[in-house]
Length: 590
Image (cartoon, rainbow, N blue to C red; front, side, top):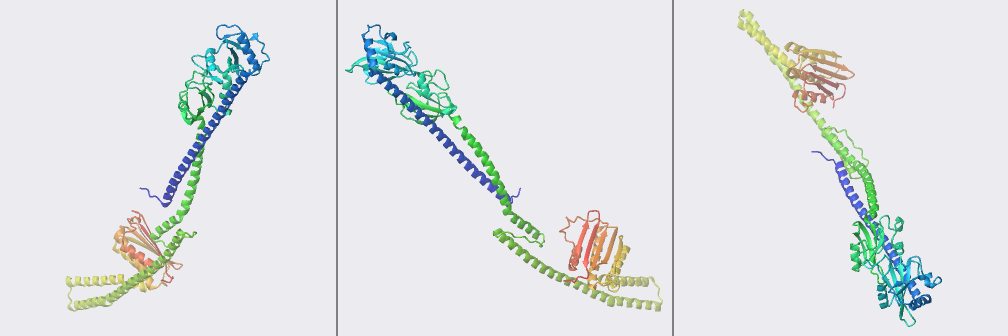
């Protein structure tokens, strides 16, 4: 299982926190931007709807004023009187407009371009067309009945069943001085006049490329031209939620599906025109409105990613800066665990980590002091132990040599004297003599091992040579010996330690190396004793034997440490072993 460091945990925690914050901020920003754009779009189409409504109401108000002025003008009164003086014909017959001279009449002044035609109907049901178009396009009988019964100007809606053409009419009765109806005046309003107000095909009109404004009657049919459909008046059914709300007297704004089945933003209300129950609707496609929203979303995502990368870099830098002193402390602690106390961590901060670093440095100083004291105590203990061993060996050597050895020699002399006197030459006495000789030799060997006489008499080099020769003679191992210098100026105590080190190493070769050849090089140069011991034996793996307890190697290490020396062991499987020891023999021992 992967181990997560403090740096990893800090980076992961900050990474998750930054993602959460960025997601929340980005989502909130996108939501607010979306609401703001939708609100702005609704405000825009509301403004267009109000403008369109005001323009329509103003237009129809002007039409009403025009027909009211015409109905009471003297010119119209004269024409009606002339029409009424004509003989009657079939109802609502259009008479020739040239029978009256009307070029300078008031009615010509109000014959504006958005009036398709103007008709004056007499009491005798004759119809006089003021403008050149004399084609019958109106149900005059229906208009006559409505206006005679009405007290005001009437706006007459398009009729799908009764219309002959798509004209919207405004009509008013003409009365005499006693307010008696003497005729009827009718204005035909061109659809183009309404489309001029309602129909906009330019994106700059405030409705973009997909917006439109249109009129709907109570029969759910259009009363103005559609931007997207031809011949839409009284042909295009607008059965939408907006129209239902209008005729339920609930004007407003909403996102709905329009008559094309497309999702739009819709603003709707009724238009205040007498006798016309029309609704004005302004809409724009939801997709067009939300284009800036998704552009903003892309920008927010880009900015969020950029901010996230910046935050991530800052997090990584700060986390590493925070955890670097901790990592140094951790590494230093591992070094201390391996026994390396020559460590000091530089402290550049004055926070809690700085205090911890300072405390760690103080701990290292105390550990070094305590370790040094322990080493001194250990050195003293080992020195006492080895010195005691050497003293005891010297005592035993002297006793064996002076007492046991002398006794055995006296015994032999006495035995030989007795043998000469008795002149006995039996084999038993010969064997006994040989046994005495072996005992004496063994006693000398033990004495030499305990305390070689040559070490004190002839020096270290000669003693080592003797032991090498002895091993060569008594074992199957050939020991080659070389020496440089005499080392006579070395203290006897140091000589004994060096001799025991070499003796221990040779003993290990005999017991464990399975070697055929060995070599010892003893050098005394520049106040340094260098000992090189090699063999061609089986060798061993240093990594596997690092923690293996070996009395021989441990004794060598302890003695080298007591002499303030350095020990190096080089060994490989089936390639033998090499031991290099360097000891400063003139250095004052602690």
